[in-house]
Image (cartoon, rainbow, N blue to C red; front, side, top):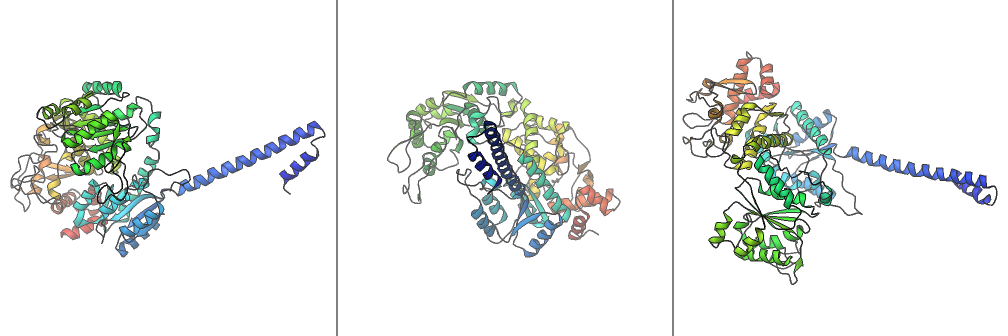
Length: 587
């Protein structure tokens, strides 16, 4: 018999005796019960903390080369980490599918799976599924969407690695790799994991709990024009009326739509549909859903975008491109608040606020008979027009700094800001592609920044010809190079024109390269445009190998042939430099 049980027995025997003794025993038993509850709660918390400690503490590695797998296994042990190593993407996904779910939510009776990985390393070229396809597949799992994904690639396929980064990879590692390279990759991933764990992630359930002045939709501005637009959005957001947003491509129409949803108080999802990207025959099923057996391949019923946006907002982008038959069905949905699934017998009620957008002159489309006038009047209840970026230059630097922060985190760069010369350069551009063009310029600059702390004019050069076959920067053939060096879109001035920088040399990672060096064996002449370093007067582009050779020779020249110091200047290890010298045939 336990001590507590004995107390209960004593209490039972003396329940009719001294009242003071009974009270004492009651208090004593109560305290015992209280301590037991505290112990159980603390034990549960401790167990949860132990599980959390296990989360995100391992590295997932995929490589078909057994020698590389062995090297990576040894590297993991050397830095005191653990990892799971697989020989193929298919084997990895098979393991993942058995342990994780594609669903973003779990039921009350299910245990949410803990992601044990803080970094994923995958070879680029593998038999069967390659690294980029594997990246796309594993990112479908919500628990892996924020995990850094690093591509392992050979030197000769570096352009493919850059393509992988555009597809969502965080970084790439060249093989054969040095342990310092591996430690850098792991260190960056750990920093990102720590950063991500402190970010509050908003879910659809929480939408109604946010104050009305939040800006999680990244609606960034400083100009008076955009301030007035934001005030207008705040005034109309709570209404259920339809909204029509117009403006050029890249002006931020979807961001504005998200801002409206964010401030609306609606608890449902924000669902975006690009009407021009889906063929009309499939768009109907995509918007309204279908029943099982409605057409060949419809093996199960599927909810359309309108149902997915129930109690939320559906954003119909490029609505002017929609087929007129579908326009009629959208009109009926707006009028009746119901949709008809493809192959369905009964209408389905939906409560989704419609926000539509177009970059076309929609009034002209109506007058030309290409867009239904009755649907136009239904959509045009609240009208919002976003001005092009060239007409609101006060927003350029604010947006540029925001994108710098975003892509510095994505690509593990320590970029602290943008230099004054770079700001002047950005303000001089026309931005025919608007915010989307500015975002692309900043993303490319952050990638090129490497170890630099600030983005400068030299980072804004469009280096794509070096990767993709020696075309001129304006997309023309060799010799057609009117706009060589433009960081922005058509019609933008060059960096040299905007900064009046007419130096006869360039500097990359602190290494000065004379333009005369660039003409070695190639017939290149010196140029006043630092951004044009890859293009000569013949229109021929230096490729990556040639550019590396020039950089290495310049570094060796500056350091008096000291390979260790040259490697430091280049931002690589001495071993990597030795391999490069051997590969390039430099004595």
